[in-house]
Length: 153
Image 1: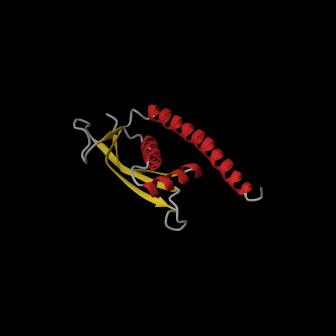
Image 2: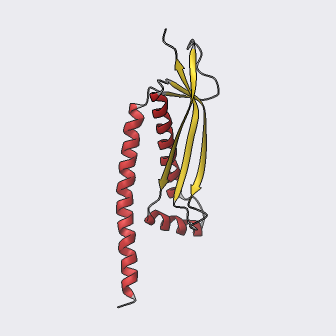
Image 3: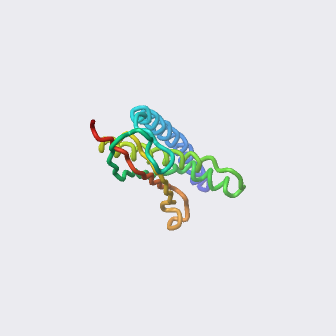
């Protein structure tokens, strides 16, 4: 019976991680979708040049950074999937959330500067805590670009 307690405790913590992590992820996705609607008027322009016909504009560097962590259940599942090989979808959703959050924070910075477009967008990603703690629990994504601010006529 004494040997069974740690196993039961591990199972309970795993289930709690699954439930709490799922709720937190759903809430974060809902927040992302709502903020994407609010910032839809700030357009991301592929390429280095702003759209033609804007007239006189000024530019400002904008960036957004997000560090998103993974819950223990997903870390355990990812470790198991890594052992088996193949696609690890829990990491894909982690990186997607971080990327979308970084873009939103970059757009919020552009909005504070009265920017209407962001061009020359770049991304940088990093594994946070991965090497030191022997686990990949967090990912950081930095999105940066040039905000185009049209001058008033």
